[in-house]
Amino acid sequence: MQVYKFGGASTAVPQRMEALAAIIADAPSRLVVVVSAIGKTTNALENIVNTAITDVTAALALADNLLQWHTEYAAILLTGEHRTEALQQIGEIGKELLAAVREKHSSDYNCFYDGVVCFGELLATSIFTKMLLQKGLQAVEIDARTLIATDGNFRDASILWEQTERTITELLTKQLLHGQIVVTQGFIGSAPNGAPVTLGREGSDYTAAILASSLGAEAVTIWKDVAGFLNADPKKFADTRKIDAVSFAEVIEMAFYGAQIIHPKTIKPLQNRNIPLHVKCFLDKTLPGTVITASVPDAVYPPMIVLKENQLLLKITTKDFSFIAEDNLVKIYSVFHQLKCKINIGQNAAISMFACIDYEKEKAAAVVSALQKDYAIEAVGGVSLLTIRHFDAAAVAALTEHKKILLRQETPLTLQMVVENARV
Ligand code: ASP
Ligand code: MG
Image 1 (cartoon, rainbow, N blue to C red):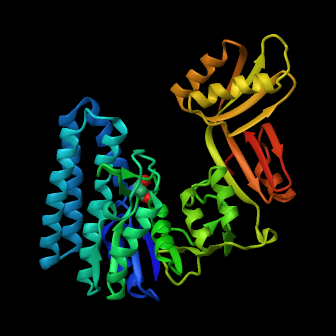
Image 2 (image 1 turned 120 degrees about the horizontal axis):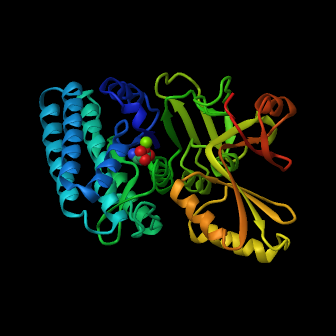
Image 3 (image 1 turned 30 degrees about the vertical axis):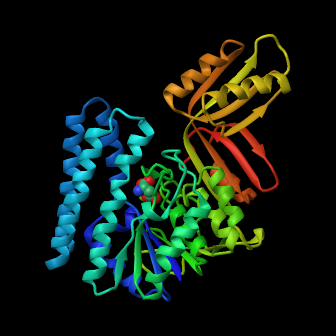
């Protein structure tokens, strides 16, 4: 059996969702389908959560709009009994969503967040399953909250593997053997106390990997709006190249440097069981896509580019001319650690340390004010962190032409630079 995952872009409009039926019907084996929230629904739900903190009435109005939007979407896509059933389900899910917004807004923020945000996926699978049934496919929906058992770390829950594997095998094997296409939600699960949790933004990829590893799947396919895994983000760089094969290790590296291609937790369960991960294009299923597997020789990669924009470069200098050695590094790093501020690249000189961080106004201000007690701080905003794996002279020349480089760090495989105006 295989696992297919469809993200929000693949269902953004009803016509797109409908076109996915052909991809599913063509699957070479039994199938579990993981679906995430439609379009930008998760962002809309986050906005509802944040609005509810100060204004529940406004949040309820936003939730009503979102439900109305899903109702219209389903009404365009579905007819007859499928439409009736979907609209009824949306109504029921909607009541639960409104209750979650109304009742839980005073509890712990992260728990409240998950209790509201999980409804995006629940609405999506309800419509998706009806669409497949309407197309004559034998689909059955199974609630991921009954399959994915996690701890109570809301918004970034960790999987309770034994329980999860047992439940997945028990609940899905029979259905799959009967030739049913199992549809379930990505991104969500449930805490030991039964409350809904989420696995972190973009976590549906991870759900697909959990299901695949628990069921010993032949492969996972993530269907995207691009031709496969590209060597750079096509929204930021021209002349990107599609890569035919990538290793698990390379994907982990790219994710570490900030590439937002696949949720980083996705790789480990697949690597453990040696399950290949395909990235394919839902707009043209005949394109070969990319396969991510255990062994791909490094030599085949073109330069792989990751650009993190909106960075702040801090220069932290000792006030007493003491060297930046272990004692100062411990002090500096613990400030970043305590304020949960990740250093994307760090480099030290005699009496200064450079740290490049994501620019988040309040967090940056807190870090600077904590460091200022012992150090003199200079900050340069509006810079980008450019990482080139498998770099060569031509790529570096093309990417740095007319750019001011503020910091540079190099290992045999990876070149990182903090630059001004990085896009080309
Ligand atoms: N819907 C969730 C999100 O947008 C999960 C996902 O898309 O993977 O973050
Ligand atoms: Mg998404």
